Image (cartoon, rainbow, N blue to C red):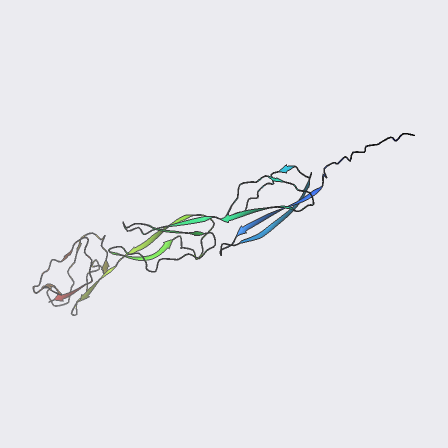
Length: 219
């Protein structure tokens, strides 16, 4: 008798439902990364896929990557999203260099220890207000000032001041010429003030003057 050999070849078809996982991680303020989304996908074993990246506000998206799906369902891909770098520009508004603050979104802002200054002005606030933490977008913050106000004090010695004589002025005021006060039964001789030994009827506070003043009426 004779033997007949039979050869049987195994035929394999790639699994079309092989699992793979995609992790999406966001950078934390301590430079570690935390998983915020996990997606489970299924596709054919030994094929290449390029999972889509996501878009998160205030985070930089990574470049998409290609992976090959291995058998067994153990294939994973991790996308890491770095925090956006934010720049705050502090314009001191006083002809001196600006201050540049940079940091990751959400990190604490190290504000200047001292306020800016400006001759003849007093600093009031930043516009808009400098935030305590880096905001979602970069921005410019401009120092705001108010004009320094200088007082004018009158010692009238029983007289009545002229209604047009101001009680204060600023560096930007126009020339101020004092008007004569009045006093019943007296004649106004003139004004006297600190540092001036003589008496004068004509007192002009010139523009761009910058100190407090006291004037005494002489009768």
